[in-house]
Image (cartoon, rainbow over all chains, first blue to last red):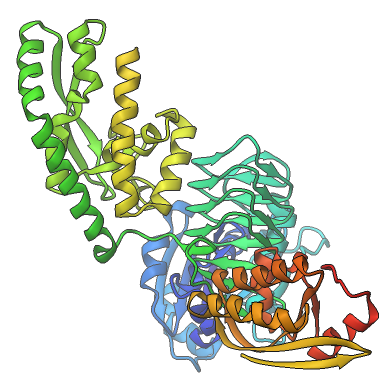
Length: 465
Length: 121
């Protein structure tokens, strides 16, 4: 059994307009990209090879799905003309089809199925027919002679909902959320039924989670937020203090500001959509709703320049104490220096940093630590742009915690950390909260104040220790 | 911003027509001119049927007007919010502060139906 998934660009043109940052076939539906649902269906129906055919570009889909090995199938891609019928498609792809039974799945649709049923034997035993169809153009058609006789008379449920606009997209997502892991193959850790949470999710103790909810990876839920019921939170999302997200979808890379109520909406970046009326607004207030994106040159340049200038000031002012302390501490054996590889701001890259250990039990070592002498060599990295003066605590590069593009959105290795400036714990979830908050809100001017605050806090902490 | 006074069952109700965008650029001028309108009547309807866009500054200006009106035992009622503007009021929970009507006539008539001071619905 092989499957051909057929998509026509005009059927998902609305999704291109509504969500311009993602290919429609990769649009998150519940907590995984849309394309995985028809792929799951093909696999449930017993397909060993699937071909995705489209009259538009598939580059993004191809780089996401690759050769299908992660699903244990052979996945290939082909182009078609918009008017190609099933017969023409079978002819154009006859080498792929061979003499096997073929299932052609057409349309940008949501396929309502239940993974607990036996689709494999049903697909193998049905005669050539339209297995399912909807008036809006979605269909599943079987070609070729049945492979095996029918084992039992129990029909597996199958219906098709066309994803022809925001309203049906919203309904399909909610259907996947509410039936959840019972019917579909959904990723995430199932803490309990109706609640799936991804990796690196940090939430304050005061957050309320009301099932069913689905939360993606790298999500920050700040104090007193209420999530759910029926909330789908994508990856790289921050929900700021005292906001409520109910019966809504918050797509990837979205920041929801403080004290907001998102109810029955689809939020994507700085866009808020009403699936019922079809109305959408683009938020111009960064503190209401905004997109979280990788830093761009124009926005980072003033920050980098400011950081470099302040770093230069620190270098000049602390140069004499550094030379003095470094010499005395080295002579006294209280200064141990080594190199460590840390994650860089750029995904997948590392940076080699000086790791200076001071013996703070001795008065001289304690004074040097209070003056942040152990960080002095790192200040030069700020001048070269490899480090920020204030940001996240540099993370040691480890294979089990790679620096992916998504995790790097909330990571900016620095000499001082925002957690130090705010006198928060400098490691773990609490540090992650404050660092992510400032990375979303910071600007060059605010950073200057926070750098001095971090330096003074460090001085008090180390000198009183 | 056009402002007219209507006599609804013996009560003077001000009708202010908001147009185009209400944001940081014109929010302050609304708050300023509203103080002049308050001298004429504490009961005001903001007709938003021609308001295309509002941001948090504009919203802040409208809430500021409401606060001033309440201090004078009056009220600000909203009418004719389009879907986009309504979404901002819902998102920020500001709709809880205001009585919102489909059109300006209903909003103005609501002042006649209630005692002088109004409270949000």
